Length: 522
Ligand code: G4P
Image 1 (cartoon, rainbow, N blue to C red):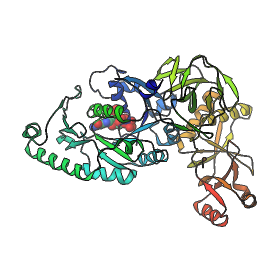
Image 2 (cartoon, rainbow, N blue to C red):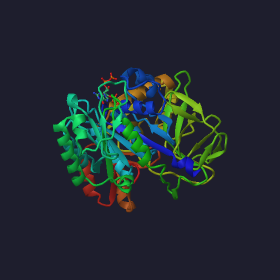
Image 3 (cartoon, rainbow, N blue to C red):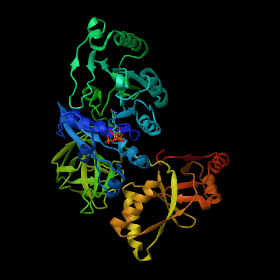
Image 4 (cartoon, helix red, strand yellow):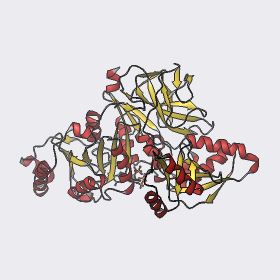
């Protein structure tokens, strides 16, 4: 069992849209033998198999809404890549996916550097000390100075960095990368059909001059010397503790620098890590199966309205057709057709080990965060809801379909599409999202899957704050004073809907014994 768990690498690739996440994923799949295209090809065709365009709306808009899992064997390793939605309106979905991974690869565009979405996602990684590797992409285009980039990464992402490869120029002058880890030179060939050969070069000899010319050779020597002097030596412990991020340079589109990344990744990235539950910490090598649902997707097959709950196996071995306890329902369930994924292909699995992700057919029995065990009463932690950024009242636009609408809203919220708050003053339902697109998805899905129609009405809110206090009296006084702005979330917790930053600040000053939280888990 230990060997099975040890060889697993479960991770996500995260990036600001357009930085090259899809391209990198494709190249990794190529190395995993999952797509049979020789060399690197412009990605449009491969995209169909490599991404998970499951929802119609997603196809129309050409954005990846849902999270899927891609798995393959590479050498002795079993790789599980969790895909995350590219569009920032689905950031919440990405946050949840990050709770199911053991490490992360961040893709940064070499010309643009650190962008907003990267910064936000890194914050989530930091909350959990997730080990991070950075891939600076698009070096075949004019990029920022690599030293400036390292400074920027360090500063903007608040993490120490350590380059394991080093670019020789960029853009049209891009000559390749020097692999600091292996002390080998990898020369860039503009042909996209060939995976480049590495040459072993002692950079202190004339051999280097022969390959890249005297002036570039001199520059590389002095840069490597500088790197050796300035940056810390790579430390596996610091990387695993989430304090130090190794950095690679390359071009995903040209399949350049990707194999180095993958080879180093499988070697250093952690196998499944212990997971915290409310009751105790669960170790992956425990014999009994435990797992939690971090993601629910509808419409994998557009012909059937089926949902799939994605479950991360946290410990032991999951076996098909075995009774497991659904802790929230206190009910035993068997799964006769659990699936594993390769983009749109899915196969039934007989067993899965800690680190794996399995898809469980779901018709409304699962909610994000649900735990499965062999009988133990366990609740996994770490699936917080963040305060939404946008809020709207949801109203019924077809009085004949009230039931359908409320069922639809319930199920979509169970899937974690958005957050529902019920205003305690007027009983109206408020939907909170990260971006406008989620409202469109909800409306579309209510119509297409539940035959219900909704209408949005504006409400001006700044933030939703989960409130708590040891001082029951003050809490009551606060709720009374703010009764028009008090709501309950889906779990019945008290939420204060602040309509402006100023109002929130005043409330914090007036009610010093109350804590206002921007996430549901505190
Ligand atoms: P994303 O998933 O992070 O959003 O990024 P994606 O891989 O889709 O890449 C975004 C664009 O950047 C694509 O171009 C892609 O071809 C390009 N790209 C990715 N890696 C590299 C690279 O190493 N070098 C260069 N020069 N370009 C790169 P597009 O025109 O938007 O799409 P497409 O028509 O190429 O598919």
